[in-house]
Length: 146
Image (cartoon, rainbow, N blue to C red):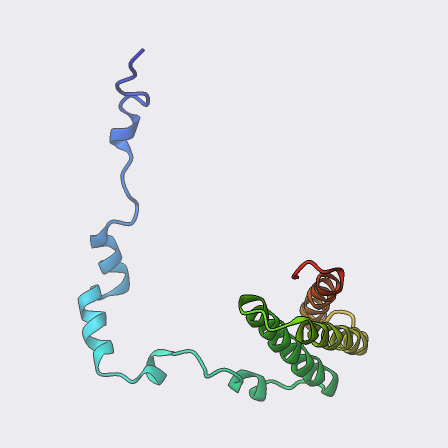
């Protein structure tokens, strides 16, 4: 069975509500005009993203939040180091030292998480990092990576 026009003439009556002429009329200028205006401006004028770490220094954070962020970053760096070790295995002793560091780090993260107030969104991120570090520590000690 061949269906030539399943929607009948309905498909022919549908038109775009935002045609290019209407968009130009609404904004007051075309894309090429906007592009020409933006060519001479510096990225700061246009609204570029801030450098890494600069936003944290501008936000009022409690000491507990700063410590949790710092320890979380350290743990992520440690997990990144583990990934490098898995790419180029260098021996069981280095993996065991990473496992010990992950264990210590996860305990510290859990303690720091408890110091954060209940509604702090940082609690969830810190918890996820701690869980990941515990899982990786268990995989190392169980021998999954050897």
